[in-house]
Length: 212
Image (tube, rainbow, N blue to C red; front, side, top):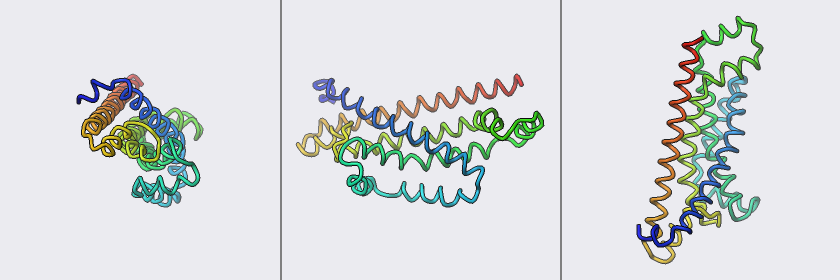
């Protein structure tokens, strides 16, 4: 822990880099994964191929995936972001499908009875009710991405993994402990914040349903 006290500026800079890489990755993965999940609920024959392919991607070791991507995206943060997007798709797509499938049939019937179109049904009923489940997928993807992003330091992506690999190279446990502690704290903080957001959304949706 001495390293955190002696080098606060470097730790803060690497933490900011880590947050940037993970944040961009999750935003891109959500922008891709949620629409894919919506399409899957409309075209059921796509469910098997898409979930299977995203599941296979998730099982590829991170270093192997980095090695595959480097010829196309080069060394640095770009490769890390592409890899993290691919790893995040499984949880986001799967939870989007599960969330929409979990919308109560009575709510759908009532919306159709009001004359809603398919698009209105999706935007005004299905997505709002599925949002807590979708957010749970984003939460899982975010926590996993924070951990995987530490390994991306080996390809020059920066982030808290730099501390860990520096410690290994110098045979110095202090930066290793610092990087591990901060990365773990970051993952726990993100998990807590997204969990609280999910609770707030469920409470608000429940209140809206009660008022309706």
